[in-house]
Length: 259
Image (tube, rainbow, N blue to C red; front, side, top):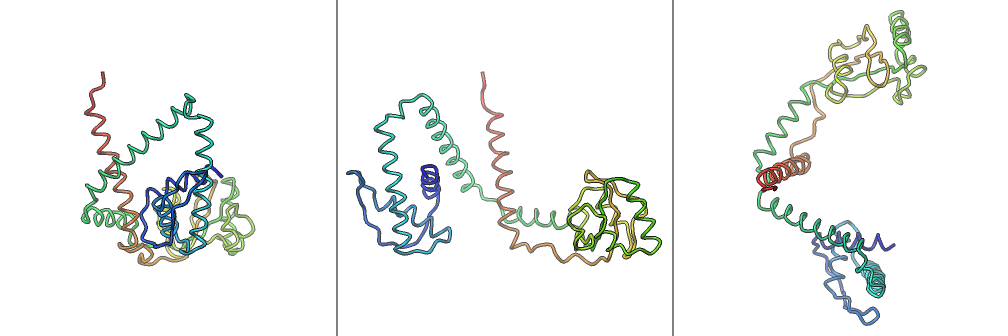
């Protein structure tokens, strides 16, 4: 319970909310819990999707009551004098400061829109212009795969063989992977179906770390499943921000005088 309360408190202090609540300061063993403390938790909970209102106010009050009691007990026990506790507190303080300077740098150096669009175009280009509807049968040995290929060439239904022999969970759907692109798989597997014509089955087993695959291309179509730019912007912004932050602080480290 203590860990849950403390984590929630830290998260609340890092988030801002706009919810309105009828909050009032209260005391726990003579120690005041302010409206500001309650509002930080309350607003963060609302921002995370919890319904505003008296019930949430009650929950916030209970959480802060428990936290205050535990902190009072910690002070009575003078645990802050314990060397290990001191070290942990210092480590936590250092991490807060590091997070703060990171957030400050990100705020002052936002990712340009042009960089987001470029990253999106690169991802879309790598995705490819064609999507493939693929089936496969996964078995443990090459001989098993070769035998299945012979049976398929003799007229045995691919779907039925997949349902009977495949080691992959797609066996329930006759080995169907759906509409996919080569980059979603290991190179050998992706290249195998990209080289086929609709209706064709690979003439040789495809080996991956999972075993041996018999691959069939059902159909192909112009790519249409790649997500829109607007839907991907938050993901791209986060990825590019992380890259920029890492690069910036690596450069700072390189410039540091270490003696």
